[in-house]
Amino acid sequence: MSHNHPSGDPTPSPADIDLTRRLVEAARHLGISVHDHIIIGRRSYKSFKALGLL
Image (tube, rainbow, N blue to C red):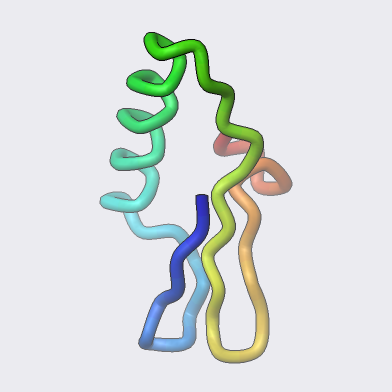
């Protein structure tokens, strides 16, 4: 999964974290694995996997 933050700050918001957890759980029920969630900012990005959030 990936998306951008128009603010330019790629730090995951509480809503990003909650939505990702719910999507990962739903995907698991369908037999789909989620490998990462990347948030793209103005000059950088954040990886949920690298941050230990996935």
